[in-house]
Image (cartoon, rainbow, N blue to C red; front, side):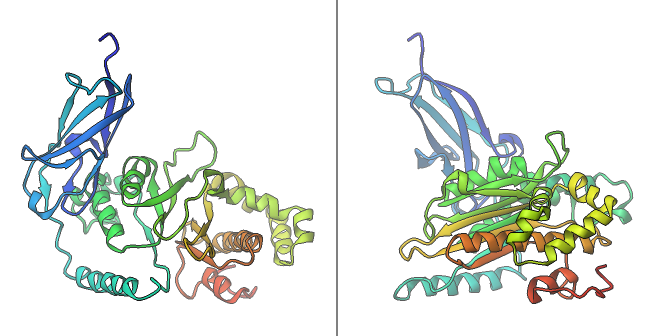
Length: 378
């Protein structure tokens, strides 16, 4: 055969050498191929087949301490792949999940209540939403590399527990344990989303998308936000309807006269006047900060009811409460617009706001206004 079915690339999160494998935590293998219509993926634990024809496998407690391997067979009509197979073995043995005595009983009881609710007539009466800053590896790695331990934010953690090949698979397990309808994440590394979160959660019935932060194509920032939703609860969403708004673009849009005249939000004109008086503030907002707001409208299966979901991560600096307030104002306006566009659908707004309960950001969000004499903000 001059053109046999051929595998051209095989990958898994972190490589077969580095990634950690845990019980009850999905593992995904991805491959590219040519002269083939599909690849059959079989999983083995200590040489015994445990899963047939799936790109995803979730090790069980019986697999702990065993060697996990995969056999890939590219095939097409008329060619079953004989002689074209490839086999790969993970370097690390399957591990037990780490003990978390403080968290596990609370989480298990919470999940049980959700399961009991689902068994009631009519199904679940509420939505479960999980929001989680999962700590971007580019931020954690910088902390580990600091020579002075007293200057490290995560000095209480062992370095091997911070490395993403171990940490992020455990986060996948944690997210799945909550049986969430909606998952909103912040500080998501680009490669972690595309190589782990998206394929692993897709295999478990989730759809979602990622929005990278940063200013311009040359930005060194390689992390952002992600929203995922259960396809058991919601209908599938078209890619064009998975929206990403940069705050700098929203500032421009909401500052122009046409948008302000149409808006009932008089504070938008105040914001525009403030930026016109402070060129440095405008420069920071437009050219230095690349934060984003994600928005997606989800339609519940069966009922057809819709919900507008927003997700963001606000600027962290302790002296930047005024910037966070301006961004919160803009984000709320955008979410209101999308709610009105969909028959006043309710809004679920998630994120890491980098704000305590008594901050100006939270007062603005909960009270719909913020006094000008709020000293800690202005």
